Image (cartoon, helix red, strand yellow):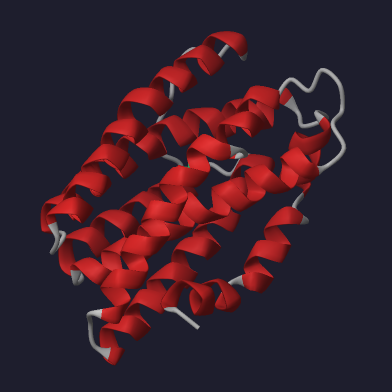
Amino acid sequence: MNWSENAWKSIENIYNNIIEMSFIKELSDGTLDKEKFQFYIAQDSLYLEHFGRTLALIGSKAHQIEDALAYMRFAENAIVVENALHESYFKEFEISNKGILQPVCHHYIHFLRSTAAFEPVEVALAATLPCFWIYKEVGDYILNLEKTSENPYQSWIETYGGEDFAIAVKTAIEICNKAAENTTPEIRNRMNEAFITASKLEFQFWQAAYDLTIWE
Ligand SMILES: Cc1ncc(CO)c(N)n1
């Protein structure tokens, strides 16, 4: 079993909890409250900016030049393409501004940033993998459910389910597997831990949107 297969096994229960979440269920059938989606998109747009910057930092540290290039492209994609996409959601869902980072998004972003800054690059690569992989699995899962006609969230679903995003995810998985193979057992364990922590934060990110969790 390679590193990523083993890592996915260790988050299988977290993933199963994610697809059972009310947020995901209601997003799939189009019944999610607009206010919860607005909260989610505004936080996610802040998330993507920081995520993009973090991917660029990790790219700058990658051992192999092709991995550096891949991460710099992921960074560009997170900032340019997804922000543009969010601008269209901002209009469609009448969001006037992004607001501030709320607790869970703040936590997730700063976990990624500090991992990228202070941990070995292999661990940082693993910390970013759930952002790719869980979104792909959730996107595919929702796409494969019976479609409700006229789901207002259909374009979000199509961003993460389907071929284009799958190609990026495959590359990210391969980079992590290669990094894991070429490092020590101790760092491999830390990679696994970072992968699990980020997966828990993916769960929390959706839960915070469902509960509209803000600073006290
Ligand atoms: C919180 C979060 N994780 C992952 C993705 C997908 O890149 C996203 N848009 N938002």
